[in-house]
Image (tube, rainbow, N blue to C red; front, side):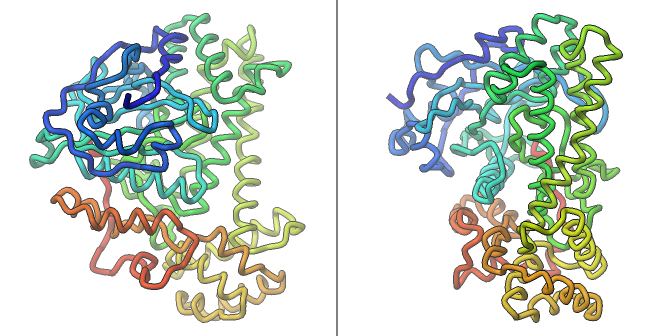
Length: 482
């Protein structure tokens, strides 16, 4: 038996949002990467998953008896424009299972073929983008950031036509659920108050159970989602992560990062940084992410209005009050994170932390300083060796003045090393690994995954994984992979 019984809570509770469907046949499935530790946590046998039967399970061609794979319906604002019917165009929810820690999770496929939501696409995926999601989502997990997880990437044996013919692949991923802001937008557009209430109750039970016992459960639910998203985006900002496509269908109710399409990590710090080839206006630039998150949550508020109060004006007032709390929650989460990154004492006022951090970021932006390198080097400066930091900055007078202010606060260098990573998915290294894997060489991918699994532990011989991109790498552009 490859897997425990797969449940179907989503389809049972919300059949209006679940379309029974089957994955396309994978002609010659071949395992590219398997997350053994995650498989074991899910109660799955990694050795069994490597068998032909296991591979057919991972691509959705051989699911357990009683499983009901479905394509989920949802809407979404994509780059600000509303699309009333998106849904899983190339994905399937195989079902849910309870892991060995007692957590209910979804098992979901990406690249499993066309569904009625495909909107003209072929429903397939290719090796590079699926491996990108594996690499970056697992790196985010190692960094302690809430995220969907990648269980496996399987080459399907199909040839997929993009700009050129590419080898097809499929991702099997795990999430607390795949409920999105777009799920609520879809239901709100049906003007079915019972369905909206059932969706909210399903989300509360799944992710924010404390809201059920609150005086106003749906307000409490909205507050919980706003808090989760504010804290999530703060953590993105602290590690220099750029999601790249923060459409409302990519915003989870759980507060997990989802859909690693055109994502990337900062090299040189610049708030205007954009990597995505389709983000021509910089809507989803690094510096815009907090504001866009709040904008997306406003769309959730619109969908929830009938549950917040019978009177629309009062419902709007409630939603507005909750949304106004986003900024406070975000700033507090970001300042707490910066307190750790700068090794500052717990008693230092938030506004002092923010002021000191913003002055440092101003120097970093003006001097084109690498984000990850700078914060890691500050740990050495806290222990008395400021030269690694000074070597990154042309404005020596400016950095020396800042270091003097900072040192007066007695920063803890050892504590800083526990929160400032040495290794992140450097864009040039990710691209190198994806290119090699597409050509059939998986060794660079394996080495990169091994390094990223322990991001805070500096290890001899891995200097190239900590170094910024060489100048010859140039500006980096990412693509959705659809």
